[in-house]
Amino acid sequence: MTSEDEKIVHESYTEFMQLQVYRAVFGAHWEEVAEIVLPTSRNTFFYGNYNFPGQKKTDRQVDATAMMALSRFGAILDSLLTPRNMTWHMLAADNDYLMKNRQVRLYFEQVTKILFKERYKPITNFSSQNQLQYQSLGAFGTGCHYIDPYYGHDGASGLRYKHLPIGEIFLSENHQGLIDRFCRWFRLTPRQAVQKFDPATLPEGILKAAEQHSETPYEFLHRVCPRDDYEPGRIGPKGMTYASYFLSLTPERRLLRARHWPEGQMQSGYYSFPCAISRYEQTPGEIYGRSPAMMVLPAIKTLNSEKKDFLTQGHRAVAPVLLTADDGLVDISLRPGAINKGGVNADGRPLIQPLPVGNIATSKEMMDEERALINDAFLVTLFQILTETPTMTATEVVERTNEKGILLAPTVGRQQSEYLGPLIDRELDVLSWLGKLPPMPPILHEARGEYQVVYTSPLSRAMRAQEVAGFGRSLELALQVVNATQDPSVLDIYDFDTALKESSDIQAVPVRWMASDDQIAAKRQNRQQIMQRQQNIQAAPANAAMLKANVAAHEAGMTPQQQQQAPQA
Image (cartoon, rainbow, N blue to C red; front, side):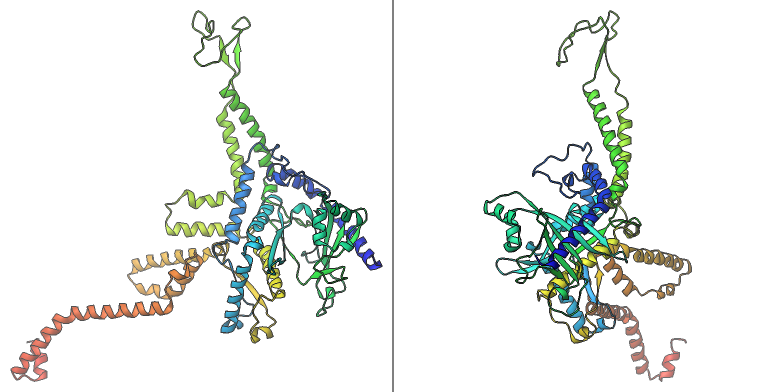
């Protein structure tokens, strides 16, 4: 290795060791959570931890309420933020003036379609890794999603997603509180290491193990950080905003070269930060987030303890401990239909009595109280409102949706800015680099392609439900005024066309169910023609009588003035 390579190895390993120290307390906290909430992650939070495949990890769980609530939490976040059955975000120009240009609107519409098409290809693995992201948020408060180009053996290219387990990631923030660097340690078998790295840069021990077809995993380090010698516009690693280094963590620590890097290049980088990292809630002075599981960890541990007592009481109730006198029966048969002579005295009083087991109902009530706290923290209770009261009116549904949006906005809404925003930025950067995006319109290119993400997910709609609820309450008050004054002009202040269209959009009414402007105009014109015909029909008898009177008067030789005075006479 060159002196520059040795310097990079030393800096990377030193940074990695320091980040381990600062994360140690969190690691112990995560381990305690994992034992009873997400057992599959046990023993994965410290450098060097190893688990044999298939190792049993649920031996410390007594009650599975928290684990089931975490699974539902992931499903809730997925349905709120990134539902696969709908376009949960759009792209638009950052300048409203540009969006008046038809070519700009068509461009962003096309880019949005390409983005969703590439994201949900089977090879990308987005859906499964996205679910792991939400699961990590619910259990440990921090999730890390890695996005990189995919290169297939058949020449196909696109996006590839991988959720990085929290135990492998060591994070660092810049002065503005943004995560701009991380170290990740991981393991590869010798065969996998030869596939990923240039064999000429691998330690001799790994190469020998690969020749012997060994399956023993070796440890490696990936470090990503802002590039100190960044030169905008330059071709090569120094033209990339973030530097990327790979190291072997064998006793012979070496800088490694990935196979897809140019020949002789021992470092690479990224034009955008390769990970979308989010926190559920963050405590001042801490980099890693805190999760719903951490907030209700006392309730989860209490429930586990109560469940043990409940099971003990239940066993004693089903198979009770029997109490007998010292000189009573010695051999008691508990077989159905058995006869135990001497089980009662001459007065018929039983000489065998079960040991009292306590009040099981009280134990169950105590457990239900803890379960309610756990389900509240994981948002399960919030989403049982609509299913448990299906007879609600439309107004009640709107009000409940409004309440739900208000409660979810502070915590779940954070994922739009901290997770989905960087995720979409990274996806667009990779697709642009792969040449999968259409050319920008000239007017947008002059504006440097500035764009914004417009979220259309169910969460965004729920957060806007307050508008619909407010309109409903205002209209209800206006109708009361109309009934009291019999003056319908009170309703003239409302633009019902705009209000009903936007209300339908907020409540996720499919566009194809809504009439277009031309269809609405045609319906109104047809309705007006029908009303005109009905008025003509209703007026026909009177018109006919008037015509008949005019004819009779004309025959009688009356002047028009006399004809007008004739009915009055």
